[in-house]
Image (cartoon, rainbow, N blue to C red; front, top):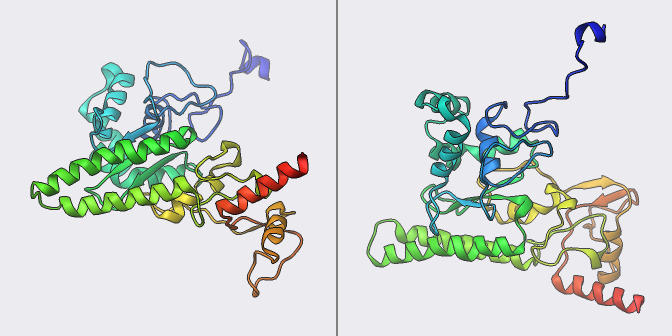
Length: 304
């Protein structure tokens, strides 16, 4: 039957679903074109991705307002869409795409709906993070989590957000209405991002299968540890545009981190009301930079 149905051989595996590894990253052949177009702009690449002329952003950080010589995010996304659709790109095509995501413009979609839809589409393990200061007229940026190392988080905090802060400070001094409030919100966001960079509890990363001396110190995530664990400081700080359905409870299995906690503190990490069971792994532990450094020194001494 296969020979009759496929005389030229079996068809190649195919999917237009961007949550599947088989997906080839094509904006014009997918169930979520705006999501794919934005991911491609931010430099995300699917394993089987085809080359179609999209030039990704150089640092994986796209502010929504025009900053640091870059166009506003909705204008950059519009350029990507016009490029990939070519002659088929029309005002009607744009309206069709916006209708599919329940928005009236790319600007409002990026600002208000993108991140919630992104998190839902990718099963609440988002790889594009919408970081904002809590104001619709304030600072927002979408970042590619896979490229968000320490240097790029510093760039977001001090270069892009810093440029926005300078703009609002100048506007405030000029007496522009609302500038002072926007400045205060931006400064608060900067403080939160600085806390994530530092990595003291509760803005630290804890990886349940790693010993205390192996835990990240400050914002130095290991992508292999997964979004669920690495996103925790940003959720805790409340800097993401919408809620991400991630919990850090307990899983079954041994817990090297809990053993390290007992060594450092002489007590169980759980409360008196929640007694330890040996077949549980705890995900919501917090350790100070000092505790991690002491564990690393102790490890070095043992190795020596």
